Amino acid sequence: MSTTQQEPPQYRRAYLLGKAKPSALIGRNRETGEIGVIVLCCALSLLSGFFVPTTFLKVLGILAGPALALVVVFMPYNGRTIYKWYEINRSYKRLLRSPQATWRSRAMEAGTRIDGTEVEIGPPPGVGRLRWLRAQFGPDEIAVLMHLDRRTVTATLEIEGPGVGSRDSEDQEALVDRFGTLLRHVANGDGFVTRLQMLARTLPADPDAHAKDVARRGDEQAPRWLQESYEHLLSMVSTSSEQHRAYLIACMPYTKDLASEAYVIGRGAVDVGIGIIMARELADICARLADADIKVRQPLGPVALSSLIHSMYDPDHPIDHLHAMSRRNAWPAELDATHPQFLRAKTRESTTAEPWCHATAWIKEWPLTPVGVNFLAPLLVHTPDVIRTVAVTMDLEPTDVAIERMLTEKINTDAEASRQAKLGRVDDPRERAHAGRVDQRGEDLASGAAGVNLVGYITVSARGPEPLNRDKRTIRASAGKSFLKLEWCDREHHRAFTNTLPFATGLRK
Image (cartoon, rainbow, N blue to C red; front, side, top):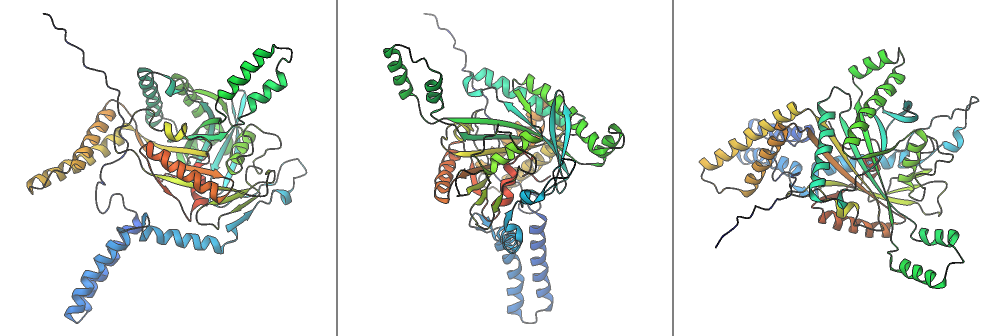
């Protein structure tokens, strides 16, 4: 009797994104204002211990300061903390008092100069000050945006994904590795691009487009049985169809080094030099995208970028409809940010008098369990009849910097595990999971991977509040299938909506 030894099965690699547990209580993962509240409350309790004469009031004052800090900074309240809600409510009330709460475009009254150039108008609230530049990118022209408030420079490419879902596991892993090579090249290179944004725009397509094309171009002299067979085939096809558009946004921080090189390249004209530098960076990125089997469809010039931004506010506007589009027509005609749960926007060419309603959610928690390559498929593909935009912004840092940060986190994790063991406490499985994540991240960084800090936002658009609430529930269910937790940005949708525009925002440096 002979036996054969079977080879162990090949498991697909799983990816770990989220953290199992915050690293520290105070200092890390805390804003400066939160630390200031804690210090102020502790200082007040210390002063009460010195200056309050009565013993009972003195003890009460000493205990009241830290308790108040814990309540304000740490206690959850409606999904956030009291500190978070204070700033959100203060900004929202200030917005309601300002004239920008109900913004109206001045494009009709702005007019045109005698040389044919359009008079600039400001963008709606939440976008910030912009400056539009042009640059030559091969035979095409590309729009370069300077965000004056954020001190960044961005440009947009329309890409076509490799169709990961239609490939086997080995090809999927190879494509992911190639995209990781792109991130590593951008993070560790000598270029100025330090941030990339992936934008997935999903719009409903005309379900009767094919039938209309057959009726217009079909052969009326075809045999009857053939026509009946084709009509039967059409009836079996799903009537729900979507169009998926993907974009890659490159972002450069506006620094002294960038300004100096732009001044030299542009021979004194900094704007021209910035456009040349951005075109050079995009050419390098396009070469890496070709290696990753990601096709670049076109660079977006001022007209195409204006049409894309316009379609974000008005999904009825086709993205490829470029007639009469300009950078000042990119913005809606009216915008209402007074409602706390959604944003209203209306354009002049809207088919109905009702404005579009937009709600934006922040991806509060990424998967805490190992996931595969297609873990976002339920959100990106398997959610029909919902107009949505998914934006993922990745801030890249060199491998050496990421390794130093990882080593610091590993030292803290090992020290905490040693302290818990000496105290004889039960081993926390979350700590073990977090330690495993740190070790895997260290192995990836040691192999040359780039450090990536990412944030995600999702905008849902509908014709009214009731359809919007229905689509929000659908998106929340799809996000749950993708192991994501969402938090709707109530009272600040006018700012959060900007994070799903092609501006590479939403992540604080």
